[in-house]
Length: 321
Image (cartoon, rainbow, N blue to C red; front, side, top):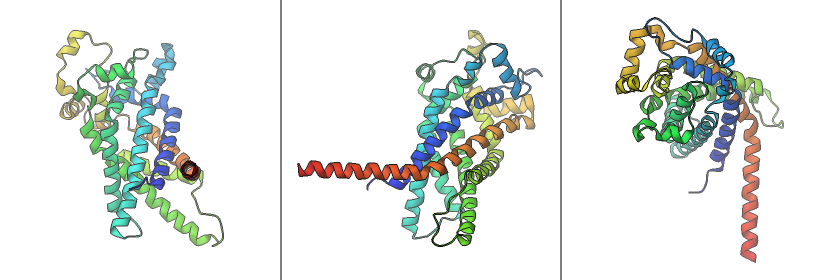
């Protein structure tokens, strides 16, 4: 089976969009992650709100540390989105070919999106864990990627994989909502457009708006799992000494241990701590990603076809020599 150029185009444009949106919003992502990772202890907390994290970086002269782990996050984000968009596009094409259908229903779309998300989670989990630990380290004390990955066991590199697989429902919900809304809008525009007009596409603002709506729905439904995952992958508190670290039970890094800690110290509302920050960051990120992707997909497709044609012509010339 040859390379699926359409899936490759979708994957490339999605990965580029993710790279740009991640870089633009990274300081906000760092503040959000550090805020989520903190659990209230003895009725006290270091960060009362998201702005406290930003103020700590400013007051300590560690503003550049808001970008700690950016390289790892970009690598993880690029690979994740490439794998996701390629898998999602490929699975959709395969489903249509095997079923003979002209469109994909909501249930099938959810299953295909979840399958693509599961592949993505398994491939990128070590990078995801490393970027989370870099972001939640004390400002100015973040370790490099290799040291972060090798300081624990192999199983430590896959901390939070179970929740990551569970959270495949997040992009599944997001892209299903986005695709359904997009198809309805495009059908409406097709009816209004003339037959001889140019292809109907979403405007940048419309793509941004649909991305925001779809991500808000997905984030709200899956947020308790998102916070548990951040806490599992977070770096150890910087004020711990070696004796305290040795005394900390491994259960604190398990799903049951984190759930019990949140319930005991913060109650039900603790599972939604930082929801506003999560929605703000993820909505902006996803909306930017989808907007950029929609605008560069056509260009990416043309470039891939041009490269393919060039390679075929070069191969033909070499055979004639």
